[in-house]
Image 1 (tube, rainbow, N blue to C red):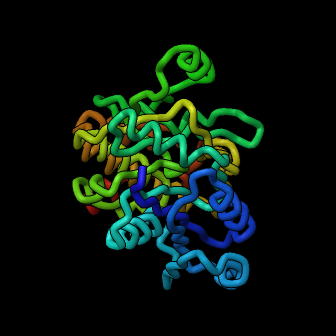
Image 2: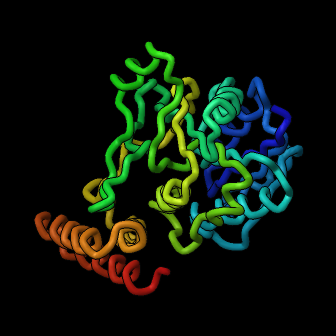
Length: 293
């Protein structure tokens, strides 16, 4: 496959993780043709590190932190305008294995895929299956598309890829034509849910979205975040999660799903006796319902 690939990496104040990500990109058996780092207004010396250690990498410096959603929006827009055939998306805490890109390109060709995703694993080899999603069309709830057992069973067959509904921005390879058809990630999402919305938008618009069983990528984040695990200083993230949940339900599943998610967002903090979290949930939910289009 002679098509050109641009790796789009979004970062914010995590230069050591970014350095490890870029080293992994440079070690691919099939190297990306171009690497674009979107610097979300970092203040930790990220730009200086890039210029010193990775002068070959293109850097798009944003004047303010636009969140993961804004970073991917701007990075994908630029890569699309430059004419690359494939956009390989990841945050700075991703570390592709040496064969990851080669495997994705092979499976994309074999499956006529518009979006092809690697299996996301921790450094300990644990599959983060909650990043590979099936969407319930009635409630807009998510469930993992795979399990460790599923992967092992499928690998014993001739099946090399599975169709899924949505995926995290941890290594998906997106065909240029997809951007022309469905557009870019929603800037307004900011964080938490922008990747699910974009990839599911691809799916409902008839794009073949598949998970490659032979390609893997490390993800060096912590365990799946919940409201209970967040300190109060991080509740601003919960606001974005709530607004994106309601917007997603409104856009893709309808009134039943909107009511379902309002109840979940209301009852969960109420059971905890956490009034502050309840107010954040409701403010986010109302924003997603009435202000996001």
